[in-house]
Amino acid sequence: MATRFSFNRERDKDKITTEILSWDGPYCLPKYETEQLPVKMPDVAGVYIFCFTYKGGFLLEAAGVTKSTKQRIATHIREYKYGGYNIFDMDAISRLERLEIWHGWAESKIEENKIEFIANCKFYSKAIQSQLSSYRIFIATVEDIRIRERIEAAIMLNAYTSKEPWADIAPRWMFLKGRYNHEIPIKIENKCNSTILGLPNQLEI
Image (cartoon, rainbow, N blue to C red):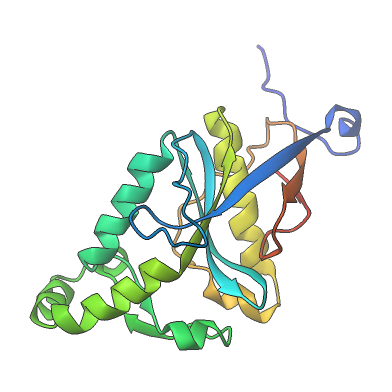
């Protein structure tokens, strides 16, 4: 009876390869482009990261994967505007503090939250616009879906295990698909023209 391959770090270390991952950006969200960043975000399959501007660089909030950045980012924008996602106090974010103005119902799925959001939509809309305008997006084109998933998981798990103050910004409810035992690890070297807290120079996926 055939057995399934399971990676062993000592035995199979020569099978580990290294790949360079190039991150393009920063981009603004669609329809939030500025005079400083007028270029529209490309529509590609790959990994994207949501960031905030921070001290001459950028601060990672979350990573995601998609076969179309145009479609996926549009979905995110709709969820923000409808109250599905968490909305932050942007002044607190600049101090590396996670202070929520609104806790989205996409995570809690509590019907009462929707009622409250609709009743106070004018108040929340201003905060939503502030956050959407503040986002800066970086994108890495990756065609293989499993590699995309593994990169996303590695980025977020790095944030979850970090003891740095910025790590508390990252959401903890994400469903991640990291490397399975039968998959050979890949060392990723991240290349980006900007400094991004939360995106290490190297990752193993």
